[in-house]
Image (cartoon, rainbow, N blue to C red; front, top):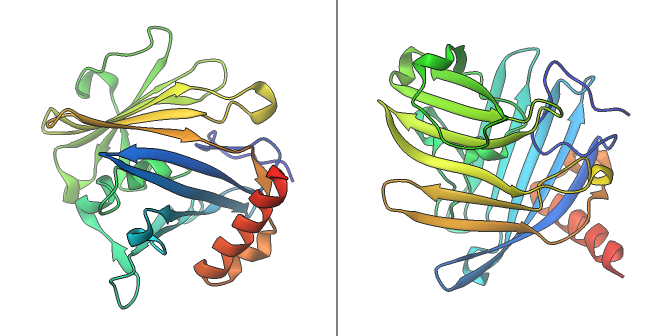
Length: 240
């Protein structure tokens, strides 16, 4: 199935509609390991995205589950930590922040801009430095998110988002940058990205540590724990 839609999805993987890959990072002195998994369906106008925390051991079992639909302009985000009784839904401004105890931004995991964001004039967004040839896309928060802006820099040829900045009332809060893109065979899926918290100056680099593997689409209809096991198995087979 060819993944197509009204706009290029973030973290797209060519013709695969159900796939996964591994990611590593270091936060402080703690090595982190993650699994990223995504399934497109309904003519690639809806997506389920999951990210699972494998390391450190204290966070094993943590996950984020995002369901998006372009047709209904909806997006639901749930997150779960082992200390919780059940997953909680992420709402309002928190959806533009990070998964607890990590630097992974919910917005940076989504396939498309959150429906609470509306296209805005470029001159209405805070200035963003970056690649000079990139096209600028600006979004403003809805009435409940007054003062929130998201600015993206996009490559003109491939439509890849290479920089994303979240600002509130003109002050930058978080910045995401694709530092290294994958090959054409990998649909230029980023190999390395950096997330920075502008106020504190803290930043974290995330590196893709595996190839892109196809996973069964029906795995996304099972509980997240079972999907994680399926992804781990397929990545292990890919590395053998």
